[in-house]
Length: 115
Length: 115
Image (cartoon, rainbow over all chains, first blue to last red; front, side, top):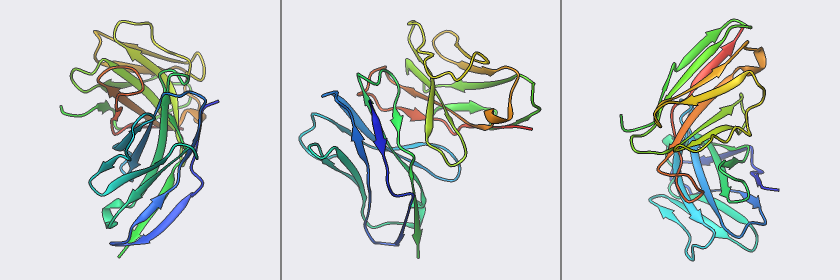
């Protein structure tokens, strides 16, 4: 069965600090992709970063990096130098051939950044 | 427009009425998805369209839900005889092509409230 687990319902961090949002996944499919999305209070899902299962290096996009540990089936999102605008809900998601066409989402982590 | 466009952004309807939600995907994107997000929850896959192929309807929760995609572009999600449990945000997304390697971009959602 395909499953995404985000164990942190809420995280609190101060501006300029780094924060790690945890994500573990379960799949027996050797080919899969892992995504992180940000959902601010406006409701839109904003794509942040993607990691393919065969990618040798961890993905990075600006202040976002994905700490991909394949053997442990984890794909944690690291946000460096947090900003107030980073306050939002963050979702980890997975796509694989076994899952068919749908992205499978975790339940999300709420990040609150304070000044 | 540059992104996925959804309308209406907010809809309040009486129980038992039918509603239609519209999605205009990113130009050139052949894959289109509908997801549902209940308050404080993750995203639930509803339906997927890819080109001229038969849609994947495996996520539709009941036969009151249906969706069409005309001309390979605009899609309409219809909910018949709405119930209070249908209250949620309905998110439309598109990607350049189907398959798990393609990033899925979301619209801002249609907030449906059934009273």
